[in-house]
Image (cartoon, rainbow, N blue to C red; front, side, top):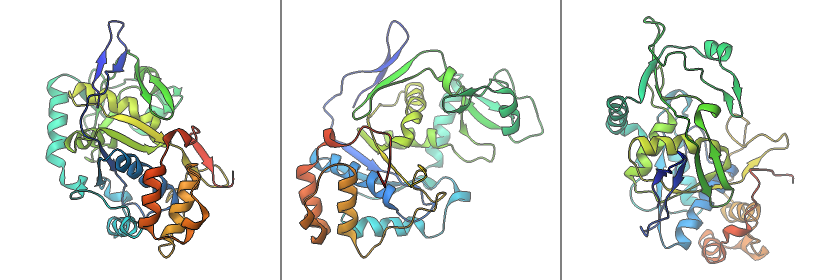
Length: 316
């Protein structure tokens, strides 16, 4: 685990890792059943934790009710169990963590980092410039919300310092948030907490030392490091795995109609995920039990073999 600090030149960087026991996690959102792309992230984080003789925790990120599908959380738990991916401890549900998120917002407000924003998406699109990851918020409400009649979101101020970190697979990553995102939302206008806030508060609560997840979240990490700095939270190590895409290059997800995992073939699913991660599982594991497959995989797991590409089409 490491703590992000500012150098004399003003760049944020991670201090050397300290010898805390390994705590990894898998944190799906209950927006649909587990699919192959989710299995890759779950398996990669599981293997990293188990090979390090560490704990693998499970968190259900259920803070966005409009996107959630009834029964999905239970279906995800069942699918993980069916594939032998057994987690440690009890499951943490974000829906029960409002007090912790409110406390984090209060600290940001007290320290002068938080402000209300009444801008609509169309206004931001009209006045903001396009950056590498979307429209950059132009700072319209930094000195006060422009409308007293609209619902207001809460934004956290960013700064001009360069935030950088060494991803354990993707290498050096860096962003200057004022140039890539601008001030970003930590509580939406509808009162729901933003992912960026909840994830850092919960990673600290669960003592997460290592975050292993899909490369689609790589660009979000500097924003999370920024919040970790402001809230004096510990900064985990990060490893972003390649994500699986369909033939059109779209990430497998509910929005792209990714099919649910076939529950009758867990060993075949695990074998395919290990192959995707270039671990070269032997063919006889196709007919093994999930426990046998995972026993082989924990011993054989080698992050150096995982492709460094951010996205891989399943037909590649």
